[in-house]
Length: 200
Image (cartoon, rainbow, N blue to C red; front, side, top):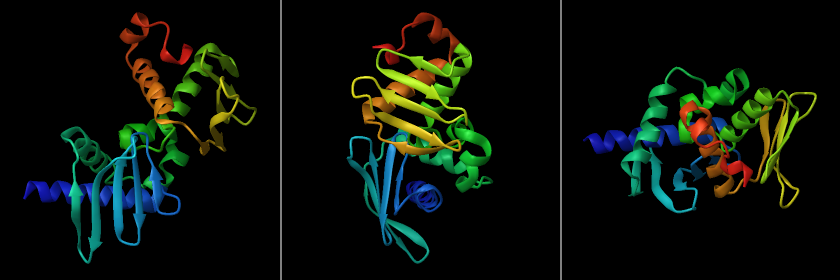
């Protein structure tokens, strides 16, 4: 019984994310990809492996596959719990990406942690650009940011009017910024590791 409830919650969250934040039936999150075609939904991890598939029927979701781990299930349940009174569609516009991460965690839009890390670094250094070993951070006069991959010179993340407008981050990039975000939120770690992965 509980298993079914958990699955219905996971399905409801997935459907809401695709409907409110997705593009063309797809939603890319920090740690997940959700895609839909008609009433069929597939949730996969960053490696592109499907972890769950379900079909929406009249009043419920029927799962044809569910290989989610307890941690993954918690991601969806926590998001459901924290967003019951939140309009996901306007979350990032009204409250920014830090709030989105607070409410959505690993289900926040892909690149959300990147935006927060860049804003934090630029605010702390008082600069409009920062050159790391691997990434460059830039902020323009409108307050929009860009992350550039130093090796290719390509932008991998950009915001327009505060919203992510370009995101070509690889799972590795996302992982680097997740680690930087974690360090940013635990000062103790910051002191111990004064050379973050973003420097290499």
